[in-house]
Structures are given as structure tokens and as C-alpha cells.
Amino acid sequence: MAILPDFGAATFIPGAPIDNPYLPLIPGHVLSYKGEETDPDTGEVTTERNDLFTTSATFEVRGVSTTVIRDTVYEDDVILEDTFDWYAQDTEGNVWYFGEIVVNYEYDDDGNFIGVNHDGQWSADDPGNQPGWAMKATPEFGTAYYLEFAPGIAEDESILAETGLSVKTPFGQFDDVIKIIDSSALSTGAEFKYYAPGVGLITETAVAPDGTTTSTVDLYRQGVVGVPDPDDTDDVTPALAKLQEGKEVKNLPDVRDLDAADFAGTGTTKQVTVIGGSTDSADALGAYFVDAATGAFSEARILVSNLSDASNGDSVAVDVPEGQSLCLFLVRGVDEIGVDLEQFADGGLQLKNLLTGATANANDPFAPTVMDDAGNILPIQPLSALGADDGTNLLNPAGSMQAIGLSSKVPGTAGIEIIGFEDRLNTSPDYDGDFNDAIVAVSDTPLPSETLGQLVREAGGAKPGAAGGSQPNGISAGDLLADDQAGYQTEGQVEDPVDDAIDDWLASDTFQFADIALYERTAESGTSAGHLVVAEDWAFSFGERIHDDWFSGTDLSVPGEVDVAATGAASLSADGFFFT
Image 1 (cartoon, one colour):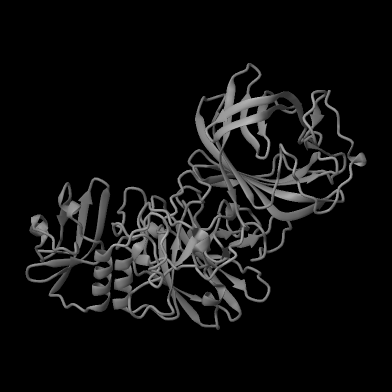
Image 2: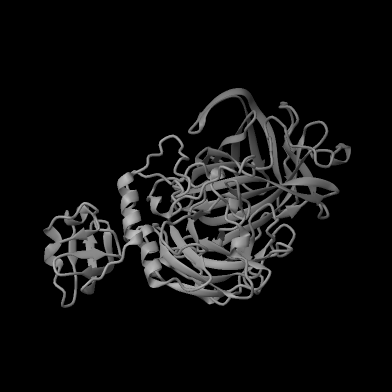
């Protein structure tokens, strides 16, 4: 029989840190876990991961100021569960657990979102409930104790099983590890949890009553968010032309933050224009406004429901009220979340602080929860452009930075804000950090066709596409240096003078062509299309860049009266854009 810890005898100091060696919960720290779970009925194995983010938020429960931990669970980067857990440490060093807000996202067999439930949600404030020990001050063998006590809802109990262990995990080797067994009268089986000093939980195994392992979870990443860069004078703006598919933008704290003032409205219209991108995901582009005085968010709307169906040059006009700033956001995997986003083209997405129930605010220390006008929670996680600070953005899940400002050498782009989005969280195993998954421009007036064409070329020439679609052929070698920061290099950064020469030449010269035709190109990776400008004996593509590998395992066809299909075997000129 487990004992119920004596809460009445515990003393808490407001603001005291949670620094128990085996469960340190330090604001700004993010622990990411992944593992496999086997369905006991079907034998189906699924891979899940979760981010455990210790926020700087506090929440009062039973008169105690608790620290808020946000724990978010994903399967293939689709959200499954989102909880806000409440912890506090007493003066003796025991860590107490006071309850949680729970949102479980439900999907049908086809992956369509059907709603949420709040199973397992409880609070020590409610009658009959009591907080329990999440971790005792010192590991002690003895009687089991309650981790949480909400009769009929949450009755987990813990007992120390072993100490002094050496445990090797995919993340590394840990010594002086303790093993704690968790079980509950409300369920069968048990969980074996291993904690390392200075880290916390490192690995967990769930077993059925017959001893069969049903799931394993391991720590695979440690991160820290919200650490300010003491010197912003050396911040850089990466060059649009230097983005490369799969090449991570390094040193994000040294990248210039997007400034809300640059997206401020004066009661006029801003143009949001798609100029490129490359991703294996179908993403949507949305927007909301941030009040400059209060930080309050407006309702959000979807500007482009699926960027993989959009064309470079597609533009949406957005009226930005005076005193508000335009915040663009990306929604990843719209074909996976099972929600028709087109219904929100005129608004209707409400951004909420789930902890308080209030409208979300730019000053919140964690990302908003999205609801519809009826208050129904939706499986949408906006990946916001604004709000970044020194490589962190607390408006995004786990504080992940999802957008950066980019510079351009194209004439006439002064005053145009160019944004590169990354559509996977930095806690995801599939994160590549190339910030070219969607590239958009924000301007006060529609982009002139010449400027637009040159920006599209700088962006790589390929529109965002789903898996199997075209990928942009990134500029070789050059790293992501700003146009005005050529002297700023980190280890491994190499400038490519050929690329720079082509950029300068094509950005400053004007050409006249004899004809234009659509073309289609088929290769092993899929099919892509664009426009081909045709002269008497040569052609130029401004839908994609033309490279030598086009003519190896590639069929190039151009419909219409202009016959250039036969020129595919001809040689390319040195710049790699023209062929004859």
C-alpha cells in the first residue's frame, strides 16, 4: 500500500528553483525523447517522440507557486498530446507534482482529426485530490509513495528499485543512475524509469503484466532556449541566394532577428508573395496581427492553404491595421493533420494561452494553442516568424526558431522583407535547419515582374513541393553569409566567387528574348515545370535552374510550337543557366 506524502508538513518558498539532482527542472531547458510503442492487440509498432520544456511560467495550485512544464507528444511530427504539468520543490528538496492540463488529440483510421479529450487531467486544487512526490530529496528504499493522487483519474505510485547503476543509452553513458518503478491501481503493467544526476529521466521501459515490453523511450536531445546573446552588433542577415537544400543555417543566435516594426501597419495593405521553397511536406501559410502596445494577438487566418499547390509569384494582399504588426506563420503537414484549412481563409483561428484561458500574447513564455470560433481545440501549431530573439522563439513549440530574415542583391528590394521558413522543429530528428522550406516576400506594393523574377531565381527557382516534387538546385559551396557581412565567416564557411559573379551579372542586366514556352521535366525524383525563354539558338529557364544533370536520366519536353526538346543534348554554357 502506497503512502500519501504529507503535504501539510511541507514548506515551499515562492520562486525557489527545482534543483533536485535527479529531477532538475531548469527554466529554458528542453529534453527530447523518442521511442517505439507496440499495440498489445494488433502488434502494430508506432514511433513517438516528446519534448519536455521547462517554461519560465508559474501557476498557483494549493497556494503554492509551481513551475509549468509543457510536455508535447508527436507521431511523425503530428501532435498527439499536449500537457501543462505543475511542479514545485519544498525546502527539504522533495519535488512535488500538483497536477496537469491535458489535451489528447484524436484521429480516425484515415488520419482525419476528430476532436480532443482531456483524459488524465487533474489538479490538487480539486476536492479529494492531493499532490504527490515526483522525486524524493534523496533516493531511499522503502514503501511506495503516490506520485499523483486524484481518485479514479490519476493514482500513479512510485518505488525506488535500484541505485548506483551505470546505464548506456543512445544519447550516452550515465553513472550513479537510479531506477524507479511506477504503477497504478487504474491500469495494468508498470514503467521502469531511469534517472541520471544532473539530467533527470534518461530512459523508460513499459512492461505488460506478463513481462513483455510494450514501449521504450530514450533521451536523444538536450537543448536550452532563451539564452540572450550579449552582443548583437555582429548579427548577420543570411543571403537568399546562399540557401542550400539540406544545409543547416548555423549560429542562429548571431542571425539578425526579424523586427516587428518592419511589419507594422499604418492602415494600409501589405503584399505577401511566394518566391520559392523546397520541402517534403505540404505546408500552409497563415497570418495574425500583434498589437504593438499590448502584445495581444488577433485572430489568425490562412493565406495559402497548401503551398505545394502555389506558384512562385502568387501574392495575397493583407490589410494591416494601424498599431498592429503582421506576423506570418507556417503550418506543417496540412495533408497529415486532417483539417481543412481553406475554411479559415477569412479568419476564425483563435490563439489562446491554454494555461490561463486568455488570448495569446507576444509576451507569453510558451506557444499558443489554436482553437476555432466555437472554442474547439485544433491540431495546428503555428510556426511564427516574429518573436525570435537570439536564436529562440518562445511563440513556437519548445522555443524553436522557425523563420529568419534574408537579404538580396536584386536591385529594388530595399524595404522588402524576405523570410525563409523551416518547417520542422529543431527538436525533431528530421530537422535540417536550411530555412528554405517556404520563402516569402512582404512588401508595401505588389512586386514588379522583373524584381519578382530575379527574386525567384535567387531563391532557387523551385516552388514549395510535396514529396516527390521538384527540389531547388541550391548554389554550390557558398555558405549563408549576408551580402554586407562578407568578412563574417565561421568554421567551414567558403565563399564561391563564381556564384557571386553570376548573381551580380544576372541581377543587373536586362535581356530580350524571342519567345516563351512552358516546359515539363521528368526525372527519377519526380516531375517539375516552369517557363522557358527561347531565342534562335538558345534558351533560358526562369522556372528552375538548368544543370548538367538534367541531361542524364531526364526527359525535357516543351509543348507548343517552339521546338527546343531536341536541344537537351547540347552543351551548357559556363553559367549553367543557358543551353543551346
